[in-house]
Length: 345
Ligand SMILES: [Zn+2]
Image (cartoon, rainbow, N blue to C red; front, top):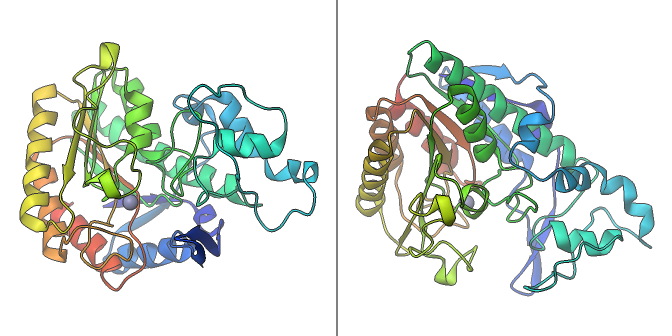
């Protein structure tokens, strides 16, 4: 299988994040990229460096002012006194606080949803590179679809993207790689597409980006968010808005659920994709549903990931697999290889 990637995924290494009242090692580091890249090359998949396709596909799903903030925030650090190695929000707007402040510190809270998502000197380059991998992936799958071929390919995107909304980032995510790929496929094919998010966390940014649209079906299978990130969304009652009503599906699973429950949800999701008539599928491929994941909440095994890949392949759709979460543990590379072997090709 073709694997699209960017060397910029070696950048952006936040050492710590603040959790449970203490500074802890940040799980979203470039070592994830190295481990996953070595795993796919070791399994015989072919790496392709993504070309620079520019910012247009990013701005197709993200607000121009947010993109400009991400691109320039670090260069503006002189606005603040005594800046450290990263810029971090310390205040966040609540409902009814809608004005974008001029100053950098206020904009950090306006554009970044939590304290685990910081801006460093190389954050933009890393996020931009990951987005280019998603664009190259969508172009490959889309071009094949236009020739009548149901191609499958994978983009090793890092940092991940599915918690990034139209106009703000959160949850280690800056640019929504899965949404960028889905929108690119939607434009290229001129037909509806679907996103199936199997990361252990709710794909809240993707949901938000397409929430009022009927041409992109969004489905998220994730651990119940009532006591788990992102807490404030991910529930079954969130079904879309306006024209998008009925085109967002959330499948929260009980914490501790294993292969049987997870795979049944994927089957259900694929049935919904088939009923929708999607011309192509984007899979937001988090690997953090693993029983070994350090921040996971489900108990999926390596065999479960292999079977998930086979199930999704059996749908027979042009499919773009976009790397999302999945954190360092012994099973991480094994689970990616197993999933891709399940997909075949
Ligand atoms: Zn995740």
